[in-house]
Length: 112
Length: 413
Image (cartoon, rainbow over all chains, first blue to last red; front, side, top):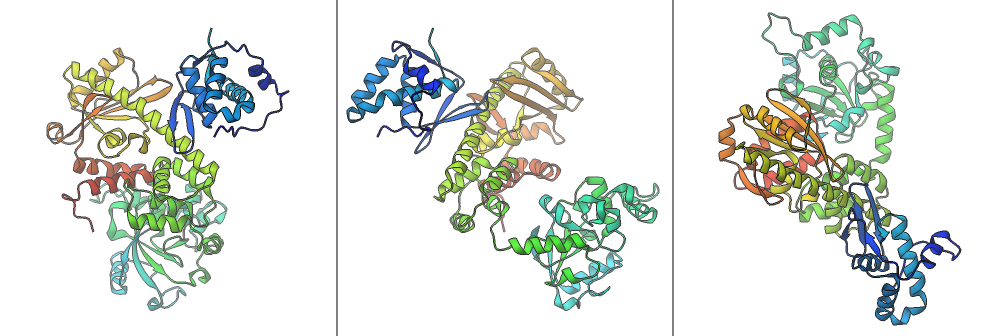
């Protein structure tokens, strides 16, 4: 159920480190330019002003939604672990990768 | 090439006589007339690079002597050819003739020879001077009526330029493959149709040029409709192609939403000053004809106003967000940026009775603001000249959609 189709990352990747070592109480704000468009099998976030779109897999979309609800990284991890208990071992990495991707693309920003 | 229907040899002979044709079917070493099949047709914009002049002096007026009409160079015209073309472009002052426009002169239809009627290449047997004049004056032979004389061995005729033969060989090689253009044409309608869906499925079977198809679709404002029809027909396409089409569709949908919102603001503003406006063009079609506004990409907003209202409307809009790019007594183009999107607003006065258009208008809403748009029949009359001036395939979808929406009114054959 919980899958991330982004390229496999080694743990020494700087972006991975960014999220992995992030303060777990960190919260995020959504970039309001990006609007979500849902298709049968994926979600596209698109900002017409930037002319940029990013496809999200299921995990990244859940994370984006939770960012929008003002959850911290730790709260997100807890919600994901509760929803997918059988995948607890990978949830931390999946969450870090999703946050990295969203931060990297300017779709979310760390809340002040 | 739009194939209209068969023609008879007697009809062609009558036409040759009326045009005083110097090269007629069967002359100058052409195969016997009865070995040709004959059709009437209309040249399309995309046919331009496959139209050739006769290789008997005319080809020398083209760059590299290619004979292609698109390579025509006015500087290379010999004096007698120039004089003849000029006689069409600039009739003598005492003459009652108007400058040539072959699009509205079926009595001057060109005679074209080819082996493949739909895909060309085509060589102009008779009417080379007229074609040169049309190309020089209008930049294209799009929508010019023609007689097609079809013969499988036409490439062996000695008056055919070398580039014709090369193109013919290329077309023959690709004949069995469905082209991006064929697929796009099948999608140039709003609502799917069972036969169209079957044809589309067949055309996409084994199709590989998805990049080319998507580029062509975007250039023709057809990307959202292409995705709609491919999805409805449950046609499987590569992930990259599917995602690119989705991205383009979302881009157009979000852009349109911003433009329609701006249209609502403009209409509300004009209303405050009692200036009636009629939407036409893409935005009006989006709101009145298309089931989902994002299916019809917009290049701007178009409003018809009464003559007297053009200047006050411009002044009002300048006070509220817009700057003027161009303004005359009868039209204006204004612009501004909204949510990162460049908005072009084109105001024009109607050549017809504006109050009548207003009375017959269709009412709908633009972002919650009452909007009046040209009625379907008026919209058709409005679209057809626009389509001739700057044609995109989406205009075909507009026209088909309008005709189908008023099947009670229009007799479609």
